[in-house]
Structures are given as structure tokens and as C-alpha cells.
Image 1 (cartoon, each protein chain N blue to C red):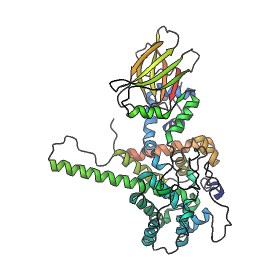
Image 2: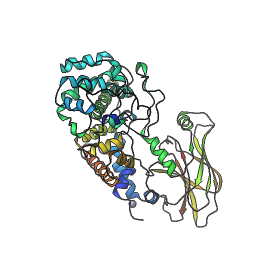
Image 3: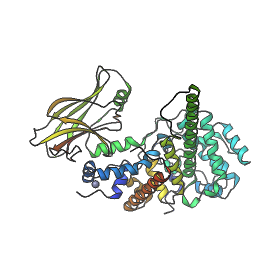
Image 4: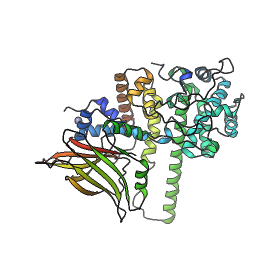
Length: 217
Length: 261
Ligand SMILES: [Zn+2]
């Protein structure tokens, strides 16, 4: 099961139209494969951070730019992603999945954190404006937007999932695959994929019910 | 029929279409629908295009690495910016059904320009459309519809026969002179006795639906609720309802079309 996301490197770039983007290179000390970089990264080898950046900073920054447009916010997200990944490398388990997938997960956290920070600042500014005008505003704004808070909780709970549960739900959430496609992709039987999805969604529901805001009826 | 299987309800929460019998049950069962809704909260929370794994790479400026090196004290440096851009996407990004990007990845977007990305819903929609034999109309038309005051017909969709009953027709979305939107329906179906036709707008996963009203064979117009997002309720559905006083969908659909989001 640990092979779920640990596909051979040659299989990783098989998005339509992105098949020929990397020249086959001899994989010596200069060009370790993805799994090798993951292992060395987890072991704290400095060269592995540079290699990971070389190989995946484009993807991470692509996500950041998609969220915030080109500029300081996106650059900050990319930078924070690699810094957090490096300082938190003890949480990365090479046998649980490839490094680029983990980096994407860290990047989602940074994006969600930035949204939450912006939301907080906006609310504080609004509250200040309301006070300045001494307006008897009837409704008080909630502390944080429910969707933004839910998002942070779900990402946090995903981090706690083991494999193959995490890989399965991430394929459903972020790669937009159906359960049949996930089964085909991972080789995990259809029924198993379905029951993992069910249990994971239940787990996420519980987390939101316990720690999230109550939803309006 | 019995309640849907728990696994099916989880798949519905993810927006996957269900087999016809389960979908029909879901349409008419409040318990199953509320279960789907409760599971869907987590799905919705992270269902934002910004999180999609498939993304066009963008090379960060050199200052980004400089900041990382300063914060971590790591001395080896990445070799070149070029290799950064041409790295393959992370594995979770691998999506066999992903559309081919407009630009080849060998030609990395300059200045942070990003390629169009797909959102989750259209996939669901297309699958639903295939399963439900709906005709699909252009996305642009609906997009125009959502934010425009132009008084003109925007889009139409064929309502295809679903069941044994020979019911079919067309539905057309129009914006009227006062800015309100309406669904003009032309229904070609036999008159009913002791039952009636009702028209609905339904979510792709058949959980939430908006009843528009009773529809008779022939041509009629239904005002669309203000603010209703047709992208969220793209299925135009005609059901047969018994005269039982139950306002929920009977589960018996006779014609359908799907507006593309
Ligand atoms: Zn039920």
C-alpha cells in the first residue's frame, strides 16, 4: 500500500502534453531520482533541499501564482513552503509518498494561512472603521469566515491521515479523480477505495463538527 | 427502494454521479440527502481551484531561493532556473483526463502568466451529462447570463427523453427586459391523468434541487430565482409527480438536459 504514490519517477509527468518534459538522464550522484531526493531530504542532507527546489519550485510557485498572482505574496508562499518543508522535514516520511506531493500539501497550507491572515486583517479593518464611526451596527461579524476556518481544519486533518487513506482522498480532492480512476491508478481494489473515502469523509466531518463553527441550520 | 449505501453517499458528496437507481432514491430521500450534505462540508472546504494539483509551473525569481538559503542556512544552491521550470508536476497532479494545456510546457509561461486550470465541477458535470444523456450548451452563454443585463436569449438545451414515457422538449434561458431571468420551456409530452409534470433545476450530484413549478405540455415560462447560480444547478429535469401533496421530487424523471457550467 505504501506504493500508492511512490510511483516510478518516469511515470510522474504523464499529464497529457507534459510527457516529454524531462530528458532521460543517467541517474548518478548528480541526478538522483525523485525517491532518492526524498530520502536525502528526510535525512537532512542540505544538497537535497537544493535539488528539491531545482525540481519542484516551479510547481510550488505555479500554485502560489495561481492563488495570488505574480508578486510578493506568491513569492512569500513559495519561500515559506520550502522553509517549512525543510525545518519540518521530520514529518516527511519517504515511504509514505513522494516529496513533491508532500510539498504541494505544505503549499496548500501556506495559501490557506495567507487567506486566513487576509481575512483577519480585513475584519479588523472593518471593526476599526465601525468603531470610528460609532455606528450601532446590529450584526457583529464572526471571528473568522467559516469557509476559511473549515479549509484550515480539513488540511490539518489530512496531515494526520496515514496511507493509503491520504493519497486516496487527495486524488479525489485535488486531482479530481473518480473512485474508479483512483482504483485504476493505485491498483487498490474499487471496494477498498470506496470504503476509505467513506471513512475519511466521516473523519473529516467529525473534525469539522467538533472544532469548526456551527453552521446555520 | 432501500437507502443508498454509505459509500455511495460519500461518492455523491464528492460530486460523483450515482447509478440510476441510487440517484433516483437520493432525489426523493431527505435522510440520504442530508447525510450527503453533512459529508460534503469537508469536500466543499477544499474545493477551490487554487488547490488543484494540476498547475502550470512558474519559475520563481532568484530572490526566493536567496530567502530560503538565508532562513535555513543551507549552502548548496540549485543549479539553474531553467531546470526549475521544466520539472514534472508532483505525482498527485498527474491526471490522465486532464486537458492538454494550450501552451506546451516546454514554453514556460513568462512573467507569471498561468495556463487555464480546470476546476472540479466540470468533470463531474461532463460525467453526469454522459450518464444522463443531457445535451450540453456552451459555457460562455451561462457565464454571460450570470452577470449581464442584456435582454436576449442566452442558451438553450434539449430535454431528452429519459424513461419509457415519450417526453422531450427544449429549455431556453433568457434575460428579460427588467433584468430578471427566465427559463422558457417547451415540453412535448402526453397529458397526464391524476399526475402532473414538474420542472426542476438540480445539482450535478443530485442532492440539492430547485423546483420551478408545474409544467404542462406546450410552451411556458418560469422566472428563475434572483441570484440562483445556474452553474451550481445545471440539470434541467422534468418529473412526473403524483397528486399526493408531497412537495419533494417523486424520483420519477422523464426528460432532462444539462447546462454546461
Ligand atoms: Zn434514503
